[in-house]
Amino acid sequence: MSRVYSVPLIVVQGLVGTVEQIVPADVQCVLRCFDVYWGGGTSGSPSVRLIGASGQTIIEMHGADLLGTSDPLDSWSRQWAGRQVLHPGQSFAVSVAGDPADVTLSGYHLSLP
Image 1 (tube, rainbow, N blue to C red):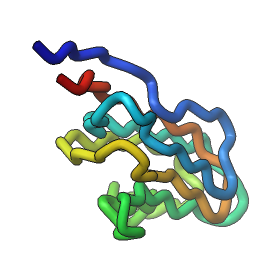
Image 2: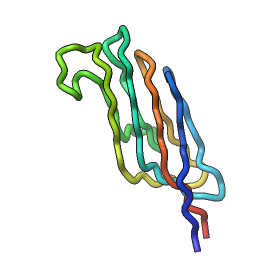
Image 3: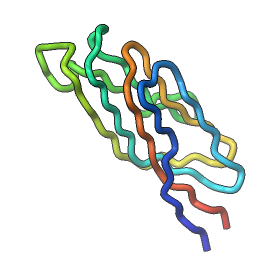
Image 4: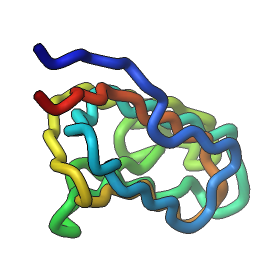
């Protein structure tokens, strides 16, 4: 019987750039919840992407355009919930361009039978 473990996958305060993870050899990984917080800044908000195993963008977030605010420097937070399955050896990443953002990606590790 497979076991399920809820795990934090990527947790970074003030990320600018890209953080990549590789799924360990003994589990399958399910990307489940992605939370982003941006506290304001100078560029008008970051562009934040969750990137899948084939380099595809799963979700991209921008601040002011998503919230409909008239002030591009207002802080914002967004959440994505889904179920993207990754196999052992595949990678996934979070990328932030522009101002730093706090990012938290959590999900499941499913032990292989």
